[in-house]
Image (tube, rainbow, N blue to C red; front, side):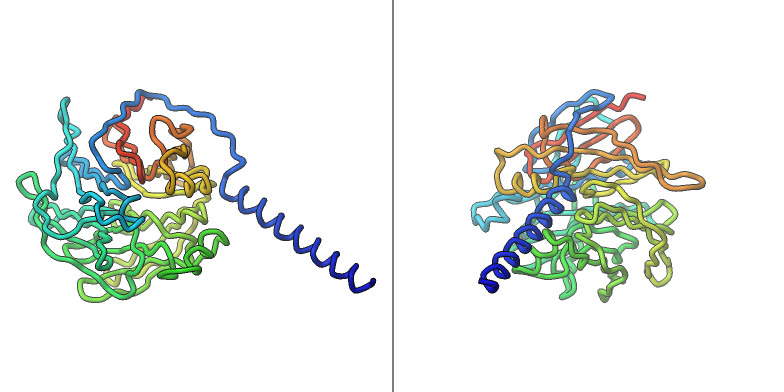
Length: 355
C-alpha cells in the first residue's frame, strides 16, 4: 500500500511539473498575449511574390530587394516547388512593379536572408542565403543593369543552418546559424525547450569561424553605419544582442542585450540608426501557421530607438491579428515608406507612415 501511495504521489508530481512546463512554454511564446491591432498610417497589400521573408533597402538607389521563396513547398520536399527569386521594387516610382532580378540564375534558388554591400568602386553587391537541395550557400551577386549577376557561391561545414547574412566586404560576411543542431530531435529541443545553442559565423573570404555563441535561435543580423556595432536577433530568446565589432579581425564582443519581449526576426536599420524589426508575438501560433496556411499568425513591427544615454527605447509600430498578412518577418523603412514582409504569405505590405 505504501508503495502504491508513493507511486501515485510521484505520478502526480510529474503531471504537475509537466503541466507547469507546458504553461510556461505557452506563456513565454506569447500565447496568452492579447492582440489589439493598430497602425498610424495607410496599408496596401502588394501581391506577386511567393513570400517576402526578408527585405533590404539600398537608400541611394531607393531600391528594395525582396527575398521570395515557395517556402512551404520546399520545406515539405515538394519537387514541383516554384523557383525562388530576388525581386526589385523601386521606391522612387509612383507605379512601382516587382522585377525578378534573378531570372537568369541557373542554379536552384531558395532564398532566405539577404544583405547588400557597397564596393569601393560604387558597385552594389547583394548577398543571399540559399537553401537548394544540395546544401546551404551564401550567393554573392553584382547588381548591374537592373539584374543580379552571379559572382560566387560560398559554403562550409559550420554553416549548416544559415538564416540571415550581413556583408562586411566584397567577399566577407557574418551569417547566423539559427540552430546549433543540424537535424533531428536536437533542433526541436532547441525551439521548445528554449535552448541557447545557435551562433554567429564570420567568413573572412577564405574560412568560417564562430564569433558569437549561446543564442536561442539566432535570426536577423545587421550593423550600424559606422561598422562598429552588430545587432543579432534571438527569436526564441526574444532579445536583440548588441556586439562591439573589431573591424580588423571580425571578432564580436557582447556589449549588451535589448529585451524585446516578442519573437524578433529580421533587423533593418534606418538612416537615423534606429532598428526596425519584424516580429512574431505568438510563436506557437506562428509554428502552426508555418504548417497550415489557413491559420492566422499575428504580425508585429517594433522600432528600437537609440538614445544618447540610457537604455534603448522599444516601441510597437504595427500590430495585426494575421490580416491582411500573417507572419511578419521584416520591416524596412525608406523615408516615409514602410515595407513589411512575411515568411510565407504571397504578398508584402506597402505602408505610409504618419507622424
